Structure formats: C-alpha cells, structure tokens
Image (cartoon, rainbow over all chains, first blue to last red; front, side, top):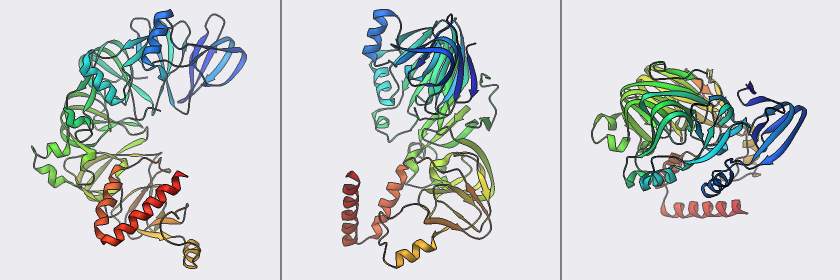
Length: 214
Length: 247
C-alpha cells in the first residue's frame, strides 16, 4: 500500500523506482529523499485516450513522481479517501477528484449514464460531468472530496444519490440520470431533489457529505 | 473504512460527524440539497406540491419565504443528509421552541411546526419532535446574558428574541457625526445580538458565507412598509452602492 493517511486531508506516498506515483499537479506538499516530478497528460490509453480527453474536457493536469522517497500530497484542504482497487472492477469518478494513484493503474474516459438525449440533458443541467474517468488495474487511489467520502453498498437493490454529492463508484453498477420531473422542475420551482442518480447493480458507491464540488 | 448498507446504517443517528441517517417511515421536511443519498422507496416532493395532497402541510410549514427551499420526503427507507461538510447534530424538542439560522436547518420531522423568526434569516421550530442542524465546528451552548456575533450565532432556545447591540464607542463616534447612515458602514465587530432572560444560546465557529435566497425575498416583502418616495430613495441608494462596488 503506497498511500498512508497522515490525517483526513493529507496522505503520504512511498515512491520507489519500481513503484512511481501519478498525482494531480500542484498537490505535492513536501517530500524527503531523491524524488523527481515530471508533468504528464492526465489520460492514458494512447491516441484514443488523448482524443477522448480532448472531446470530453475530462482531463486533469497530472505529474509523475519518480525516484526513491516519501511524498506528502494534499489539495486545497479537501478530504482525502484512499481506496484499494483489487483489479476486478474499475473505479469510476471525475478526473479532477483524483489526487494521486499508483502509476501502474490505467485511466480512460467513459460516457456516464445509459445514454440518450434525456440523460444528456439531465447531466448538463445538474452540472454533473457526462464523461467520467475509469481507473483500471490493481493498486491504490487517493480521491478528493468535500466533507469526506463514505462508502455505501449496493447489492441487488438500487440507491438514489444527489449528483452534487456523488464522488465515484466501484463494481458492476449501472448509473442512470433520473430526471423524472417535468420542465417546470428544471427551472427551480419544483423539488430540489428532482435530479438524481439512480445507481443499481452490485458494488460500492462513494458519497461526500456536501453538495459543494470544491 | 466501513462500507454501509441499509441494514448497518444507524437509525436516526450520525453515520460520522458530517453525515446523519434518518430512518424514514412517513414524512419529514428536508431542505433542498440536504439529501446526499438514500435507500428504499422515498419520494421527494416540493412542499408546495405536497400540500395539495396533505392539508396538514400548510399548518406545519408557516413560512412563505422559505417554502420554495424545502421538500417533503415521504416513504420508507434510510435517507443520508449532509451540508457543506459541516458537523451535524440531531436535537429533540419536547413541547419547546428553538430558533435557528435557516441555512443550518437541514430537516425536521412532520410533528414540528416551522415559523419565520422576527430576526431575518432565522426560523423557529415549535412543538415536540426531532430536527437535524449543521454547524461549522461543534455547537457551543451558552446562557444569557450573552452577546453574540451575528456570523457565529447558530440559534437560541427558550429565551426571548435578541435585540441588536451596538458597540458603545462605535455609537458615540456615530452620534458625533463621524459616521452617518446605516448603509455601507458595517465594518466588523460593532454590532452584536444581545440575549437576555432565561434560555440557551447556540454558537458555532464563524459561518462560511452562503447566500440565503430567502433573505432577498424577506427584505423585498418588507419594502411594502415604505411609501412610494421612500422606496424610490432606497432604490437610488442601492443602485449607487452597486455601482460603487463595481469600481
């Protein structure tokens, strides 16, 4: 496990030549040892990944941390949650929630939701990104959240999540943007919870204790 | 880190300091945006829409200014609440009254009655029941006599509504003519809310400013007290202030 939590908002990463770390640019707080930082593009996956990132706007300036030493990461006083991915299913989240991850993990851009114009309109109106980042492989990820993220299990049933409070998910899950209200609600006179993400299947959803993004 | 599911989530208790879980069975009033996630069969309806199917809603929610910022959650399930990552606490009222900053009130059960406080930006809960409120840092309880900074004041219970106290030095300077008019002169600590009598005052670490849309509606409704010429003067001053702040 390369990430160790120092407190709720700072993690310490052990970097070695065999295990470099990718981190959000500007998130390095301090380090010890012989460590170098090199800017990289946020999206892997070659040309397809590059195009996907350009089209979606789902990109994030990242840097590779290489060498031998210990590095502290944190960003704007946001809470940090460390997840361990076992490789069975990707982590789905927005790119700018990624504080740091094992360089061995692959990232790619994915379209969120079941598709169709209805879902697209719903996503645009809630401010929730239509495109999200998938993190594949086996390794550790440090995620940013406002107010701290907590895991909720979905097993067979479904769960409703406020799009502003949604952080990410892991597992065989289907995400639908449920815009079940009419146009009247979209302009703010109806229920404030008119737009919801309906998440069903089996897996874990991460939710933060705030409606603020950052 | 524990992964929660509907069975392991607490019933009407904190999941962690920033998240509260309501075991819903029936109806609760909830502030728009307070819901983070929910399990079960729960519907969220605007208070205005719900009042057409449940006539008691109008009797419980007695505040036209705030009604559009609230929803009724109805059904059965577990609803998770949060607000800006603030600390969340549940309070039980037993045939009592408590006034709280409207921005910090997240939810209350349908046995309680909500009314607008005389103090702008605050609402009063009356009766017996449970409500959930947020605070920036833990809540501090103090007893009157006490003067509270308006930003740090979270609410008060059982004591009379506060009066506004102005710092004596600021007042004497003001009366000496160095400062004039109420507008655009607020600069810091010269104004406090003054509590007297028996009761409890609730404080939080200083508020993180968030625009309360109801304050505009509240003040706008009070401009009906003005005569036409007074309203015109106020309009000119507001325009002047807006122009000044642009530069």
